[in-house]
Length: 339
Ligand code: NDP
Image 1 (tube, rainbow, N blue to C red):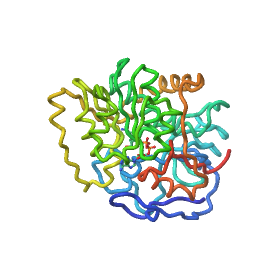
Image 2 (cartoon, rainbow, N blue to C red; image 1 turned 90 degrees about the vertical axis):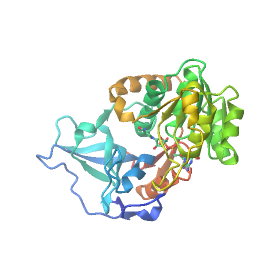
Image 3 (cartoon, rainbow, N blue to C red; image 1 turned 60 degrees about the vertical axis):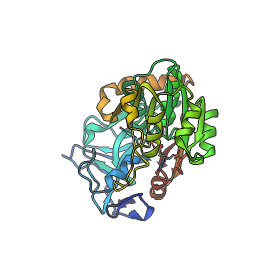
């Protein structure tokens, strides 16, 4: 059973050498009697930026840290090989937290969700469009941003797993949407495939405040912030009166020792801006509605979803590290095995 382990706690950006492929032990492909668990074959594993937070011993985080020298845990799509839980049967496909390994014994089966296979929807979408990142976009946009038709919306890390859906939902809601991303290829995708009104490469802008002023001559009503740092500061300066900022992520602030000074906080007062941080897990009651709405939109061709698929468990460390340099184009997924 091949596994990917975290070697030790990290500081700053993760690197491939922080993780290690272990050939692992022979395991019996069965869920032990009395365990109430399921033994699964992992098909797809998700690389998500929040996992970096689990790679440091920072107890105040919203998820507990991994243990050094232990297999990495993350979201996945898996096939049940054996079950000691009457709610799951051999052959069923499930999604939820699993481990970065070929086969996993999952004891906490309450968090697993069964997937009804549908020829029109790739299984891997259950860790992306229909999984945690998609839900983050849906809950964050509708519940935190309080969108209105005609609002001017700005999304950072806009081509990523979360951002690409935020922008498309905002368009469906009748908003004007601008996204930023870190390469010209991503900018093209935002404009030509994902339907953003405008997009720009933030790495080519020496003055982010001026860039946003150019794209939003009337100001920003909603900023969906995936990155934090200097982009957040620049957005504050460009917000409209009564604007809303949803703080979703801080991927630019990798190390807690990074120092970010804000120059534009006074805008929060002068423009009566609402800034709200959120966790997708606060909105779990909306999950069934999210699945229904997004499946419907997808099947109607109203939204698309871009994935960055890498093959083989061995590719997981590099793919994960790539999230922090913008290597991924769309939702980063690892294909571990075929069904
Ligand atoms: P992405 O698929 O967008 O991947 C991360 C992207 O972030 C990269 O592709 C890169 O894109 C961008 N990035 C990396 N480093 C930097 C940097 N230093 N400055 C600016 N941009 C950078 O990730 P997700 O869509 O999965 O996640 C987006 C954000 O949402 C993350 O901050 C994540 O932690 C957060 N999140 C929050 C949740 C919540 O409940 N609050 C739940 C899920 C995610 P580019 O090339 O454009 O720079």
